[in-house]
Length: 340
Image 1: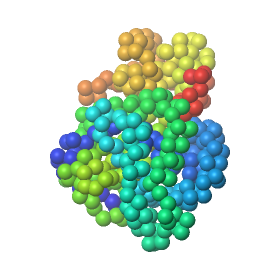
Image 2: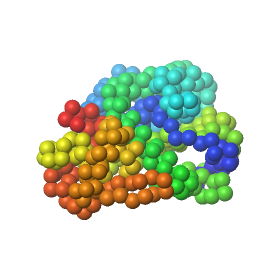
Image 3: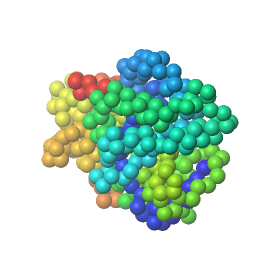
Image 4: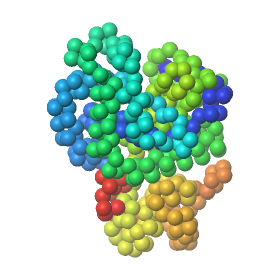
């Protein structure tokens, strides 16, 4: 298995951050593979896959770089970069992609050669591969991510809230649990990254970032020896079926804001998470929860310092009877549907 040795100083300084570049890379990977994990990804793919194929057909060098640089267990360094750790927790996409554009060509060629048996496709030799990759990621960001970024960002923020709460309550073993297949905290400073037979990597003294993305993919990236990142699929509404906020008969019965909260409580969530996911004010969320509690549609329990709310059996029945559970919040958040 592949694991990293993480020193106490690195672990103490580790952070969850949002990265627009990581979201663009995750979207690129999904477009390149052309497969969807669920209905929401399928709707997004159907909307953008034709444009992506047209983009590659018009640029044979980019198409060759995609074929060479994206494997089943590996993605070329020219498509990835760890976050820079901006004080506010999020950098602009232009700042992040500039690091890819500035990557030395020799390093990009050496990385490709190491994974391709030492042979780089002739079409790629003599080309600005970092610039080519950066241009493709810029296209993916502008055309397929930016229109939905406010919705996606809310889900990423909610995932970070949940992971941070898990960290406070149960340490890194809890925060990392279920983050990505094959990843877990082994103890004694050992972080298992995947189940592959890779040699251990010493990263003590480096900065370590955990970066959620809304699509069902994940990878790692680093700039040795000082910066490492783990990109993982978020565990929020985008990752699983849920209800559609402001839904049909349920919205008419309870009001759109209260209906949205009830639908989202198919799994326990804190008021902070609900604020992030719905975009409603904290006071509004609190009032809706009070009414739902009095009606017996939700209940609550304490988890460490957090109060978590979730639907009761009666709440499940109301949502199911309204037909709202047959919709996916993912469709709304990936397509920015005006109905949501």
